[in-house]
Image (cartoon, rainbow, N blue to C red):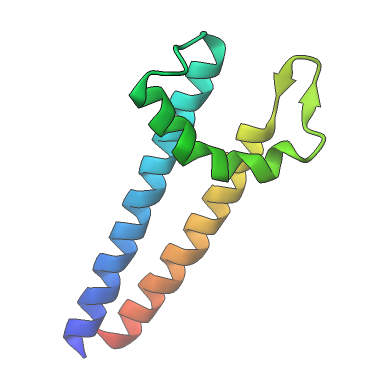
Amino acid sequence: MFIFGELFRSLALLVSLVFNIVYFILVIRIILSWVNPDPYNEIVRVIYRISDPILIPFRRLPLQAGAIDFSPIVAFLVLSVLRNFIVNILCQVAGRLG
């Protein structure tokens, strides 16, 4: 059972790492919204392709005050809660198995 415990611990670390990468991409997306990047740049397109599925559901909510869009902040909060929930469950399962 020790092996399964370590497997779940490693899975918790991997999930945490993926969420950290998503946070980083969202920060880059926010910075790109302040400047006017070339929409045909491949890096910009990849960042938009990764971040759009996360931000689109929050953009449907009325989270704009003038020219300021608060949907990335709400996305950060929801992703943070989701990350804590998933990682805590995986760590608890790892603790019980190993």
